[in-house]
Length: 194
Image 1 (tube, rainbow, N blue to C red):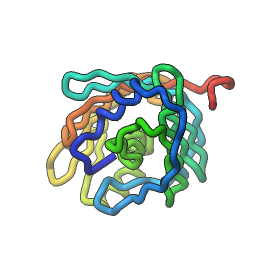
Image 2: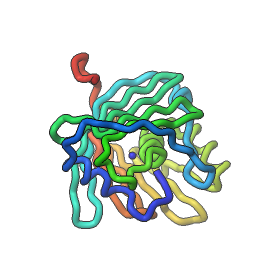
Image 3: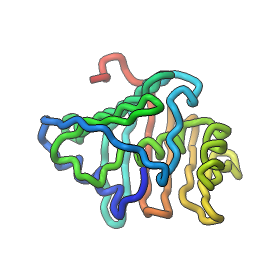
């Protein structure tokens, strides 16, 4: 799931309509004005999961399947359409963020915004707090199962966990760019990686 666009979530809806397989590769420059990106090593463990995403943006609802692989030196997100076609692949090594995308993926898909959302949900609270404090923000967990992101006293996002986020459901609500993501995560079956 990260910043500074007037439209950020409709890209999910558009990926459902894609049927093309061709892709282009380019490097995304992460500017200091957007949310901080944390290195994969700051997660403190390796993970490989599959995620079913349902997003709500205005009156639109959209679905997407992702395969997320996190190793100490590399984070990879593969986004698949409802038809199982690859929509995009993001790679982040802690310094450089690159992506491959099908030509039909709209420019509103911002790789750093997607990674910010993933990190807000899954990275350890102390790592997020340190990075956000340096960026003028604050991440807290005021209640068990609830995480909040604020900047300048304004609530930007809130995360709710129904269970273990790596094997269960999570709800992420953005208030700065109003959209919601419902994420169902489970361990990746051996035959699922592509």
